[in-house]
Image: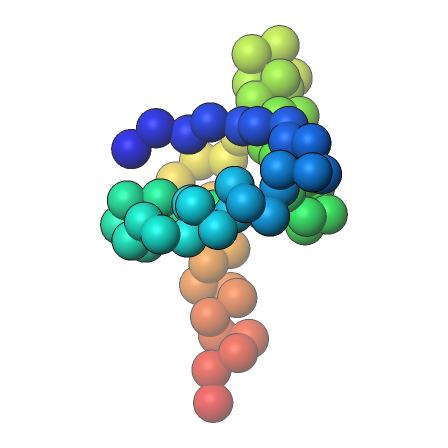
Length: 77
C-alpha cells in the first residue's frame, strides 16, 4: 500500500472526502493528521536522527528483558 499526503483547498475538501469514502477500508484509509499523529511523527523523526547521528542510547537484550520483567511483576495481580 502507498501513502500520499495532500494539501486540499477548503472548497473541494468535502467532495474529495465523499469520493474517497466510496472505496473500501482495504483500498483507502484516510489518516487524519491530528496533534497526536503529528506528535508521534516528530518523536519518530528525532529518534531516527539520534540513530543516524550516533547519539541514540541503546540497551542490550538482557537489560531490556530485566526491565520488562520488572514492569510485569509490578502490574501482576
